[in-house]
Length: 87
Image 1 (cartoon, rainbow, N blue to C red):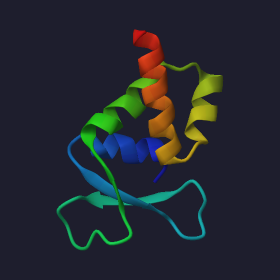
Image 2: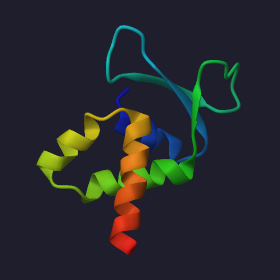
Image 3: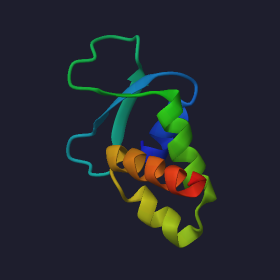
């Protein structure tokens, strides 16, 4: 699952994710309230919404660059772009 797919999955509620071993840019995800969360990172629907809105608003060239970032970096960039757009 790619970072954008993880963000879209988290739109329905809080999810946790982790990098898939041996596969860069791929993630495992599951709903927050299932099983152990040790070693997983939380992504809430607010953050997921910011990531997907920024991704959807970019042109094709910038979408590829944005999608190439790690999921945590995508969240930081998304919030910076949203703040810049509102300022």
